[in-house]
Length: 361
Image (spheres, one colour):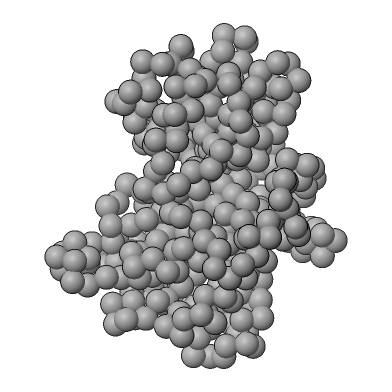
């Protein structure tokens, strides 16, 4: 843990709010603590070893061990043919990766941040996502696009967008957004084995956070099915639905609200497309209230899609009050810390929205 904290501190991250939530990151059958960074590294290592068609490419992923050390040690183990440093040209190396996938390989294409994937969005959407359909199913594109997504700390507007809604809008892609180390490892292994292009949205502020992983998740055969949400906390009064880092915010808010007699059911989406609407509906039918939490912008966001699905489905008749969204503010991310803190959801915002939804505020 000391090493993980040191790494996060060195990169200038605020570790206090992240590490104080470890008390909620435990499971009954836990065996060992693993950071999200190491879980991702394990997943790639195991899949590179299992399938010689798998390879990793991106900026600084090889000799430098990755900008965030997620690919640490892989170049020394697998060499230049499997772990490839690329020029600073997202369109170029993404096109190479997509072509390699069409030729029968299984590339993992790392973006140093998903904000830079804008340079390659033509390759991701027009080349990768649409090919299977346009070839009448004859040509699969088994590729994983992965890297940090959403806001970090002190990186301002051009490095802080959440692309969950952007990519989930496009048919032909699968989009996943892990929270815990178990999510990260299981979903990445499932994504690498999938025959479809998968957009794998990590979070920079979670890389150094340790989670306890079960004995089962330490197995090389462990995967998390894409398209299946996980109930992180059972509750009866309100359903909280979130993904990535903000699942932790929901669990923190639920712990505070429990002391006031409000029991929140917290759902970790894990998969944005396909979305496990059935699990959300089942929960809403039990709690009769819904709050969605995300770091992205409000317009046309993940929470907006969840609210629409609930309104259009059988769970709508079970709602005792309107569904509420907690989102990032509808502005480009400011650089100043005090403005940044007020531009993304905080635990207090989740608590306030729950109380408002339950008519307690």
